[in-house]
Structure formats: C-alpha cells, structure tokens
Length: 440
Image (cartoon, rainbow, N blue to C red; front, side, top):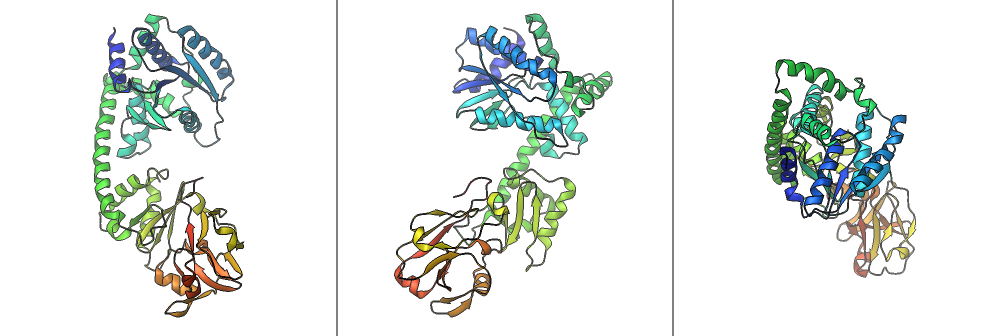
C-alpha cells in the first residue's frame, strides 16, 4: 500500500460506520484519483456503499461531454453515478455562484448518516489561504478548510487535505487514470487560476516549501478561530438573558451585556452568533452595528444585513429574517373559525382557546386609535398599553386583536377584557420563527 493510500485510509477511519459514502466526482484529476483510490480500497476492504455524484453546471459547451465521461469511468470501476444538472445564478462571481449551486445539490442528496467525500488537497488549502488573505479576510476567513463539517443531513469529509497535487498527479500517471482537463482552469481571469499558475510558482522559486508553509499557517488560523469561538460562547452565556415574552421565539441578545464588552469582543460575539443566520458583513459595513448600538434609547434603529435585519427593542437585539421581513396581509377573520390553529399569511398561526361568550367576534390587526377596557385599570389606549408592556415595535402591527363588533376586547398573548377573562377563553398567537420558509 502506497503512502498516499495509507493516508487516505487513515483519514477515512472515523467514517467507516457511515451509512454510505458519496463521492463528489467532477471528472478532473483530483476527484478521479479519489474515485480510483476508493474503488481499489473497496475491493480489499469492507466499506460503506459507494456512489458518485457529478454536478453539471452547464457553464461551457465543453462540459456537455463530461457526464458521459464520468459515467464510463464509474461503470468501469463498478460505482453507481448520479448526474445532477444545476442552474448557476448570475452574479459578480461566477466561481462563487457555481460553488454555491454545487454544494446545494450535494446537500439536497445526502441522507442522514451519509458522507460526501471531496478531493480538495494541500495545494487547494494554500491557494484558499492566499486568495482570502488578498481579499482582507479575518481569522475566520483565513482558517483552513476543515477536514470535515456538516452538510445537509450528512457530513462533508475531505480525506486528501494532507496530500499534494503532485502526489495525486503521480498516482494518476502511474495507474493510468484518465481525467478531464477543464479549459476554464487555464483561464487566468479567474483569481484562483492566476494564483495557481502565476503567483504560487513565482513564490516557490524563492521559497520552495511555500505550499506547505501556507497550509500550516491555515492550520494555525483554525486554532485561533477555535479560541475565538470559545470566547464567543462564554460571552453568549452572559448576553442571552431571558426575554420578557416566552412566546416570541426569535434569536435575541441582551444589549447591556454586549455593550459591556470591548469593541473587538462585541464583533467576535456577533460574528459567532450571526454565522448560522446570515452572511457576514465586510469591515466597512460594521458601522451599521455601531449606529444600532449607540442610537438614542427611544430610537428604533435597524441594521440591515445580507439575509435579515437586527432590531433593537426592550433593551435587546433581535434578529429578524424570513417572514418577519415582509408585511403580513391584513386579516378580518371570524373568531369562530379559530378553535383550531389557523395560518395567518406571513404571520404564523392564531387560535382561540376556550369558548367565547355570544358576540360578533372578529380578529384583525392594529390600525391605530384602538383602546381596551383592562380589568381593574379602566379603559386604556392600546398604544400606551403596549408601551407599558414593552412590546417590541416590530411585533405590534402583527399582534392579532379580538373585537366584538368594533370593540377591542383582547390582544393575543398579552391582555383581555373582563368579559373575555370571565369566559375562560383567550387568543393565542404563535409568531413566525424568523427562518426563511418556516413558521411555528
């Protein structure tokens, strides 16, 4: 067994109990070597079921023959192949858009417990570090590609990260592996190709170990990122606190705990907290955070990010995404229809629990000027009442209101008149959860 095969076998050892191994197979050198190595290993050892996935982006005419090539290779090796055609969204970076479409296709096809094996190697690691360094990335951006991470319902594993491109090419030539040469890989208008063909060879003339050194630096950045994440988790414990409204299940943080940290720790905490929710802003865009943090206490500032917004209300930061970014359709519903949970367009669900007394019951949203007879407190203006209850401004226009004719008698989840109180009924609203396409 060669040194390359031994390192691959060692890297895959933790994943031997996976439900299945899927191989990201482009037909190029790297993935072709990985496919051949796995096919050879499967002949000698008991492995999880193997299946290759080829993603066809349709970006160049030459690529139309690649699925057929991949099918022939897989048939010869006895490995099943899925070919997936994707549409690459237009944008400023064709490379990034193609990568996003490719990984989305992979994620959609991974079942729970399955592993996608991808053929990135040490040279890719070095190129990625250099590329991100030139774009001004921070510690998180400069961290090495992880050897494994979650993807969809399964995991992405990169078992060749300790191997060089030269090792893969030597194996391919020795074993007679036939691979596709993507014409776009020679196009130096793409930044990564320019680094690969021009910059790194020039650096290697002066520093022959440049690829190994860059990969090692990426590993150091990974360790630094882990330490920053641990610090962020410690700060999160202090900043989460307990929101006043248990039914408002939105990501939120206590502003005073966050503001007590240094600026650097604030940014570190926010990057960590926002990472699962949105793409990160660039350095210049962080002025929006300072404006939000330092606004007057009675202001309602908003920091707009790529995939949602941060609002400030009731001394907390609130993340709004998905349906919260739109305006819900107005409603005028008979409360008799709401004995079971009823979907509100763009606004979660509403339900009347218990039996209402006789009346002309309707559910509507706030329009302004409403007032409510509050038990023991007399008639109160709804706007003032919501201020007293410290209901966040972004919630108020969404609160379902129960009317008897034109008389407001209950505010969902918050308060109701003595007549409704005596009946034992109340209006329960389950708001959207703030994730695109999902609601409670």
